[in-house]
Amino acid sequence: MSLAQENQQPENEEKDKLPVLVSLKKSLNLAKELFIFFLIFYLILFVLETLFAGFVSNNFSLNWVLAIVLVIGVAAALAPEETGTKTEEEEGPRIIDYLTSATLGIIGAILIFYKAPIENFTLRLTTSIIAGSLVIILSIILLTTKDEEVKEREEEIEIFVKNTFLSRKTFVYPIAFLRLLFFKKVNFPLALILIVFLFTLFSLPKNQDGAGKKLSFGEIASFFKSKPAAKKQPVASPTPEIVAEAKKVTPSTNLMVKVLDGGGSKNVLEEFVETLKNAGFVKVFFGDADNSNYKDAAIKFRAEDKDQADLIKDLLKDKYAAIIEAPSATASAEITIILGALKSEKEETTELTPESPR
Image (cartoon, rainbow, N blue to C red; front, side, top):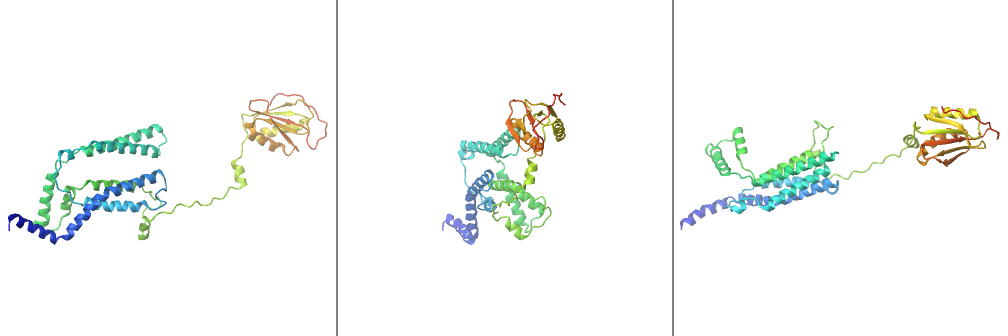
């Protein structure tokens, strides 16, 4: 038997003794290949849910996809690294890597610009540009940084593990465990898992009223269930009194109101002028109309003063059977009121002499 066959025989025997480890290695390598696809799938769904609320959550819970990504990501981080020499071309970043970093930075800046709850346009634009620039800079740093101490760390880990587990045959002390944890080199997917997990954790809505509340198993399980679409609760229609109160108009202090005598008595004219002032109108004047043969009241106003004219009509409706509306001949803000004979008066009317405005 040759020397090569003698060396190969122990290796084959060792592989035959550890079929479970071989299967585990294949499973971890498969998880490593699937992780990036599931991560991209989750990020696409997350962006769609952010842009179009309910696009994903109305069909299934996004937390299930996140759980799958976390499980596969942990398995991918534990997968053994492939041994082999890399050529000089494979070691350095390619142009497509830089283009991908720039594209991700631009997309991130656009999303932040449109989704950030900042009303100030300049501040929102500045924030999005800074965020996109940080994404690009960090990506380039990750692409160009070379780990020159990988071999030294692997040797230290090998010596540490050998002395701790094999030679001393003792359990790992807490300090030794921390040293092993910080010395151990992990694959990059584990960092991605932590970033996605933390980002999702801070994105979840926080229940301010449930502080210190213990969660039961049912409540924890319901977190992964798809939330049904919120049903709109029926809202009672407002009563006429509420609608009237909402539409209530107050008298304008800048509106000029002219009260003219068109056939009524002097007492009625003066009494109505005082009524307008008590109601809240400030600029109120009175005088004579063009004639004294008006049988009812007339009110002239612009279309934009319709609400104010309705207030005045409410003050007149108890005294006059009919109130005639007519467009105002002037473009200024004023309402002209002509008071004719009251429904209880005779056809004879008393003329008024013009007086100065009050």
